[in-house]
Amino acid sequence: FSGCRIPNKTEAHSIINSGSVNGLAYSPFNLSTGLEFWTSTTNLNTTGQVFTQLVNGFNTARLTSTNNFALPCRTFTVTGTILT
Image 1 (tube, rainbow, N blue to C red):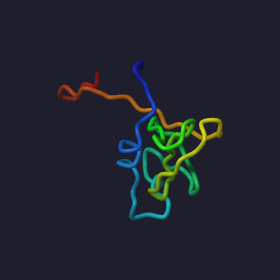
Image 2 (cartoon, one colour; image 1 turned 60 degrees about the horizontal axis):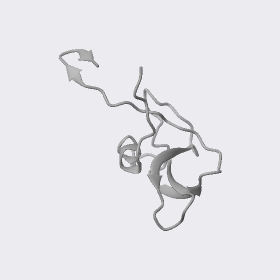
Image 3 (tube, one colour; image 1 turned 90 degrees about the horizontal axis):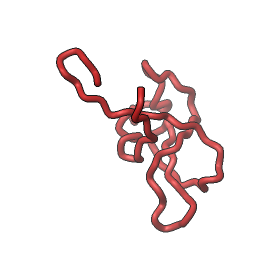
Image 4 (spheres, rainbow, N blue to C red; image 1 turned 60 degrees about the vertical axis):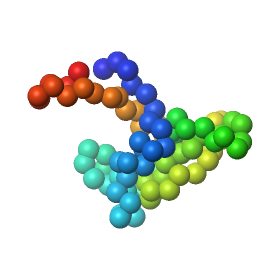
C-alpha cells in the first residue's frame, strides 16, 4: 500500500485499550507490555522532541534521536467491502 504515515498522538491513543495494563495485547496488534512507539506529534515546548505512545495509554515526550518503534498507519476509504 502507498500513503503510509506515522499516526499523531490522538490517533495512537485511540487504539489503546486504556482499561488494560497492556493496551495493545489484542488482535491484530498483540504487542508486549512496555512497548513505546513514535507519533508524529511534536512537543511545542521543546525543540527536537516528539510524543511517543506507551501501551499503558500514556504519552511522553522523547528526543527525536531516541530509538523507538513505529506503528505506521494508512487512511482507507471504505466502499462496501472494498478498501482503497
